[in-house]
Length: 155
Image (cartoon, rainbow, N blue to C red):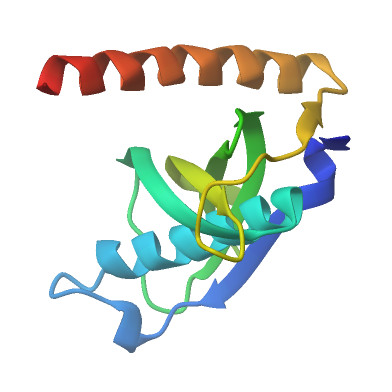
């Protein structure tokens, strides 16, 4: 069985408060990382139909800050699937009052689907519907090869 990328899309929206800020009055990176992990988990749960765990945070790139009272969009979609693993891309935007959006963060996470005994379980395939999805799949395969190379070098 295969699923489409759009079937597991997830999004969170936040209006930032002082409680989300660090000492420089910018969004605390750890808070954003938590939200990214939640969105990635929702995407992976929707795709797999199972509980999931975060296996790898591959890339987490902070491009710009967010400030109090900003509207923040945290959007996730699946880019690649393996046997039990799924790569999820999560992009974070600040949305201005006029509706324009600025990308402030991109993250790639690898999630693993778990059965009722918390053992990895096979996930559905991914049906790629357009050139953008095929390009993301190819880029994900390159990231996977780099992850495997890094693991091999550590031991």
